[in-house]
Length: 153
Image (cartoon, rainbow, N blue to C red; front, side):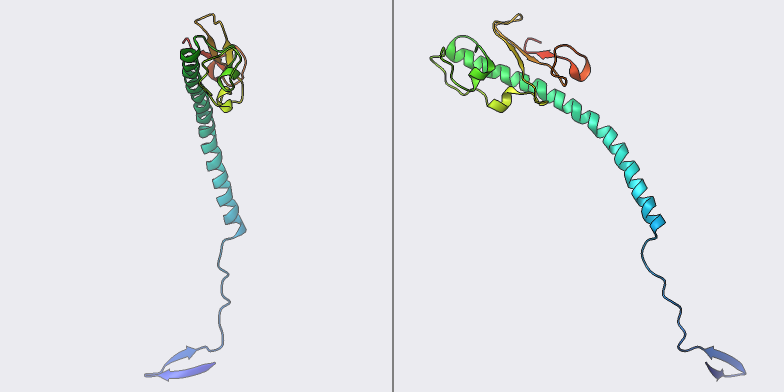
């Protein structure tokens, strides 16, 4: 330790060689856990809002696909005079379609967004043919996202 005089009797003490231990920088475990918990809470809140919207979007996509497939069947009718016996006839030429100009649809278009087959009936009960989207459950009947939609509606 060194002492030095500065003027009128005041003493200034200077310490050399003594340093405080540096404080470790970074976050404590408690701070990190608090941040992770907050991120988790926010993620759950966002996911609970997004998932129902995603399901509604898939249902609307199924109804749009129904209309598109119905137009493909109408194009088949214009070329061949009558609707196809089955939906597969839109993809591959059937024996009884002499003016077939297809393919009118892709194989992937014959399934709804949920991976279920569209319902098809020829002759139909509501028109020349009935094309049905069965909703999320893929079964006739239902409410909400399981409700059926037909080309005649």
